[in-house]
Amino acid sequence: MGILKKLVVVFLISYFTIISLTGSLPLKANEISKNTTEPIKYIERIKPSKTVVTYANQILENKIYLGNQFPVYQLQKDLTWKENPYNNRTWQLFFHSLEHVGYLLSAYEYTNDVKYLKKSESIISSWKKYNGNPKKAASPWAWYTNSTPIRTVYLIQFEKLYQNSSIYNKKFYNEVLSLIEQHGNYLADQKNYVWESNHGIFQDQALLEIAKLFPELSKSKVWYDTATNRLIRHIEKLITKEGVTNEHSISYQIVVLDLLKQISPLLDDLEYTKIFVEDKIGMLEDSLATLLQPNGTIPLYGDSKNSYVVNNNINDIRGYKLKFLASNGSIGTNPYTDILYKESGISVFRNESNHFQSYLFFVSAFHSTVHKHADDLSFIFMKGKTEFFVDSGLYNYELNDSMRKYMTSTYAHNTITVDNKSYEIKKENIGQAVIQNGDIESDYSYVVGKHELYPGVTINRVMLYVKNTDSILIFDKMNSKKIHTYTKVFNVGENVNFSQKAQNQFLLSSKIENNQIELINLDNKSTYQSYIGSKNPLAGYKSNVFNKAIPIQQIRFSTKDKVANFRTILNAENGKGISNFYVTGDNNFLNFDLRFKDGTNKIIKVNLY
Image (cartoon, rainbow, N blue to C red; front, side, top):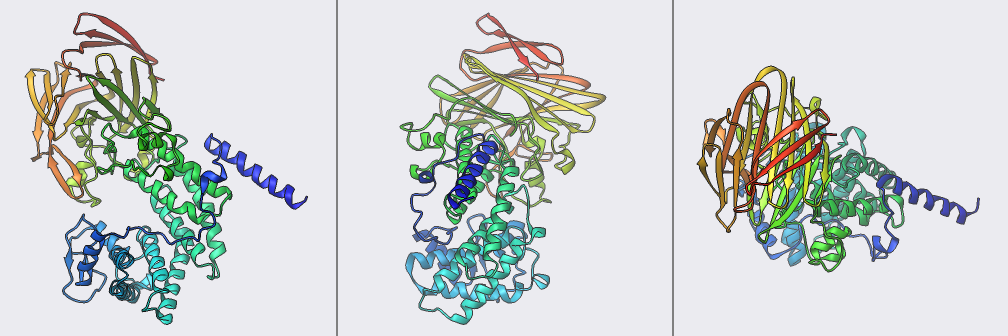
């Protein structure tokens, strides 16, 4: 076979493989990279700026600054690399990732002052002295699955800046190059690789960067092949066919998206891996656009934190739905429609009434234990700028911290709790929470979720969104052969005033705009409890900022039985809505008989499968 025919065959195999894997056509070459002839630049995790220089100046004074999550720590003696001043896992991770070196390197780029490079040299030399031998490292975080690839990126950045600086020393350069090679061997070792987690993507990114920026290293070609082969298989595991990561966190979807954008320039143009990665970038961006709240922030699902994702650099966006938001609707496709990601276990329903946009986020998914909260069958509801029913968000990663335990529990989410305790986040529960079905119509949408995460108990939840009155109906069915205490929990946002109007009628009024929600509890036999920032029991908190809990209103309704139903109405439009509803049906469908406040009735059929 001639060379030309071989090339054609390879291209066609790649082309049609992408279609089979992603369900869409691959991007054209000119959509992949407009600067294919430009040399590959090292990755910058921290962008140079005047603010970064202020942080770096503190590091010059023997202080450790690792980001705004933690106070600056003043060293009293030389580094031992066993430091842990706040008894915090995340601090140790950042410390051994050499985040403080990252600030110094960015300050050097911004000022061209070698004092920042000299301090970086000193810290790297110290780290190598105490941790260069993984078997005798000063801390278990030195060669951790995530700290190692992040540190690798900083070592590469240092090496490239150092070799062109006025303080260049060949001996130290070669020492760091040897250290980078040691990191490459660690990252290429399959026993150190982490599947189905962003850690593995970090590892592939770092290994690819070594391979591409240091081709003189003997294993660079092998490392490139190792990283690209792992990356394709990993992406297939980590990202659903709907373009959503299965790490139970929108924040970590953004992390994976950013990683893939940094990886793409390291890949050979027109190579299958490059085309595949670029296609996944577009899918991640588009699903992200569909999940955004009306104010442009991400929902606090799982270990997520408040953040905006839309920037004005349209040329850096591949997804046409995200392009729509970045261009204020001038190009692309409007993402603000109802969406049902059944495989991913997420739905988003939207509406508009009285010039306010409404947003209903629902989740029922147990893909793994990674960044997972006990939030199955939970929901978030926002209208206008007001978050009426909220998720807990990311508090911290300290597994034994009582507040972390609370923030990841069922009580911190708008869902069902059984026997006054949360279910366990363990591998045995993977796959035990799903979205069974859903439907999107012009005047209503619904989603059906189910989980069996409490032993011997099956819980089903239907959320029906009736658009013309901006009403949400919640129907919960709990089924067991034994008697249990079932509790439905609602966590109210911090910008909401809460009041009880009648025995089972409550009013939630926005503090920041003329907007309110009526909550009607239709379970006459249930008992009612309310908490605001309670310490005993721990209840009524959320987290907007790392390591900080803020008090919020929490309400609970409980009943005791083997089999029980909960019915709840949320009316989001003043003066309109539904006063009652009844549910009949069987194991395949339910009929919702709606009774509107204006005296009219309507029946909506909900298919459970």
